[in-house]
Length: 423
Image (cartoon, rainbow, N blue to C red; front, top):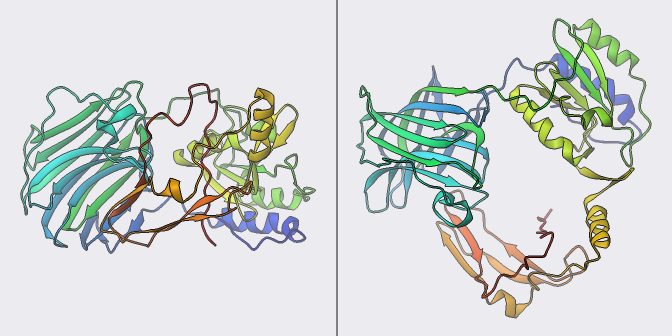
């Protein structure tokens, strides 16, 4: 990813320079993202540290609807006393949504296996409310032991998610957990990751396989060359875009380096089949402003192997939605929708001292947060809730309220949540 300090007067001059440098220095493949003091060598991942520690396997294929994550794990002992500890496999599209197959030790010292889902920040989402899933037939857990080697296997299909734990050398699983995936919201894709929390453990023989993504639309034809095809998108018809620079020298340098070049318009970006890897290998783009509906196809393309190079900074700072022949930012898009539907926005919660008294904190391993009303801090001058949550490496903190009746009426069309952080 190329970055620079944005200067409107210099941006056009930097297009070719930054883009070419980024492409010519691009690595052949991604690398794992390490979170925690892991010792990694020759395919072995060792960790003996408190807190949550992960290895995000960005060098392995992204799993979409069908795939398998496997690894051999031996837990040697505790790395931190008290609380929960776990080691295992994770499938995660985001930090707040994932499946976790793990060897767990509870605060009481009990050892058991589990397969749990966090969905958009809701823990154990597979067992409660609108995200509750039906367990597979014959599901069973098991106890496990220190210094014993286990093979963990997490399998995702379009119909189910299944986690199995084998004692090394066995052909039948010691434990088997799983849930049926039908129409309920659930994690159905993600990167593979390794997790170890409060254990001294060793993980090896990691394997990740993913089924090819099903084509959603016919792929666009791109020119071919020895080093692949580079798409160039400048978004010159987006609001606030400046006059495009002369790209002739840029195209020439890419051609000399062995790349084919395809210039893309906003209409191309919005056309299904444009972002298909490996037809399009690289995309050099002015990413300051983008059509919002282009984000997911672009993300899917990168997950398949495409390399994105930002020609400007800051990237992804403005998103736009189409309304007729105009592009609108989110606030304008919502205002137009409310006007079209002839409705007035109504607050779900009006923040004041009486309201904050109805909310209750919950936490584990974290200090309590400061909760107060911030007068006039909202986007339209509304009073807001101000939270000062202390940093913590392990544990959790929540603020929750029970409503006596549904706060959102059935006929309400859109519910918005507005939040911002400090500097």
